[in-house]
Amino acid sequence: MKTYLITGCAGFIGSNFVYYMLNKYKEIQLVNLDKLTYAGNLENLKGVEGDPRHIFVQGDICDKELVSKLFAEYDFDYVINFAAESHVDRSISNPEIFVQTNVMGTVNLLQCAKNTWYNEGTWKTGKKFVQVSTDEVYGSLGDEGYFMETTPLCPHSPYSSSKASADMFVMAFHDTYGMPVNITRCSNNYGPYQFPEKLIPLMINNVKNHKKLPVYGDGMNVRDWLYVEDHCKAIDMVAEGGRLGEVYNVGGHNERPNIFIVKTIIAQLHDRLQDEGISEDLIQYVADRLGHDRRYGIDPTKIKEELGWYPETPFEVGIVKTIDWYLANEEWMSHVTSGNYLKYYEEMYKNK
Ligand code: NAD
Ligand code: TYD
Image (cartoon, rainbow, N blue to C red):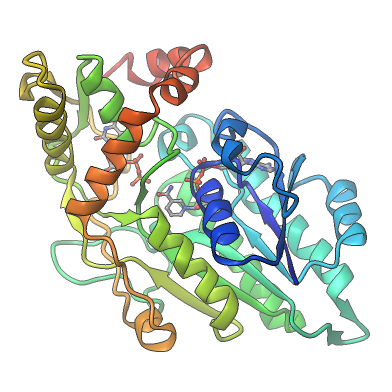
C-alpha cells in the first residue's frame, strides 16, 4: 500500500485530488496536512468523512516539528505539495505570506523529506517529491506560441515569483542531493470546490445574485482552462511514471479570453434559471490588475508523449459540469461567501 503526504488538500485542487485518488485506488493512505487558511475548507472533504484511508491533520507546512513528526509516524512514499497561497490579487496586496508559505513551506517539506529519505549519500527507493506548480512561472505570452518545459522562467506577480522560487528549490534539491522529484506546471483549473475569488466561481456567484461582473482591463486576457479532474489525473500519472528530475506542463488548447468565459456563464445561467435579470448588462469593465499577464497557453506534448496524458474534458463540457455543481451546492457557496469573504470582496473591488 502506498502512503502519501498530501498538503493543502482542503483547498480546491487538493480536495478534488483526494476524491480522485480514493476512487481510483482501493488500498492507499493519504495524510492530508492543511493549515485551513481562508481557502481551506473541511466542507470540501465531507464526502470522505469516515474513510480510514484519508487522515486529516490541521497544521502548517512551515512547521518543522510537526512535519518531522509526520515523517516519523508514517513511511511516506510520496509527498505531493499542493499547499500554497494561490491568488494573484492577494499577492499584489500582501506578498509576504506568499514567500512564507510557498517558498519557506516548500523548503521545509524538502528538508524533512530529505532528513528521512536520505542516508549517507543514498536515497531510499520508491520515494518521490512532487511539486504542484503553475504555468504562471513562465510569465506571459504574446498572440503566438506556447509554454514548453524549456521556456525560461519569467514570473511577473508576487504569486508566480514565489512559485518559481519554490520550483527552483525543488530542482536544487534534485541537482544537489539527487532527490527524486517532479514538478508539474498546469494552467488555470476550474471545477467543483473552487473558492469564489477566482474568475469562474466568482462570476457564477455574482451572476446568480445579479451583482456586477468585474472584468479587468479589456477582458481579452487569455487563460488556458483545465478541468480539475484532468489535472488530478495528470498529477497521479507524473507521480507514478514521471522521469525523475523532470518538469511536466499540464494543459492544452482550451484557451479562452476572459470576456468569453463571463459571457458563457451569463448565457448558461440565463437559460437554466430562466431569469431575465441575468444579462450582459451586468458586465462592468474595471481597472486592470497590476502587471496583468496577457496570455497563458500550454504545449502539452511532453506529458502526452511520455505518459499518455491529454485533457479529456473540452471546455464546453467542463463549464456545464462546473455550473451544474455550483447550482447543486448553493449551501457550500453561501457558507464560503459569508463573513470574511464579504470583507475581502469589498476591499479588493472598492477602487475598481
Ligand atoms: P487553494 O487556495 O484553493 O488551496 C490552497 C490550500 O492550501 C488551502 O486548503 C489552504 O488552507 C492550504 N494552505 C495554505 N497555506 C498553508 C500552509 N502554510 N500550510 C498548510 N496548508 C496551507 O489553491 P488551489 O487552487 O487548490 O491550488 C493548489 C496548488 O495548485 C497551489 O500550489 C497552486 O499554486 C497550484 N495551481 C493552482 C492553479 C489553479 O488554477 N487553481 C493553477 C496552477 C497551479
Ligand atoms: P484568476 O482566476 O484570478 O486566475 P489567474 O490570475 O491565476 O490566471 O483570474 C483569471 C483571469 O480573470 C485573469 O486574467 C484575471 C481575470 N479576472 C477578472 O477579469 N475579474 C476578476 O474579478 C477576477 C478574479 C479575475
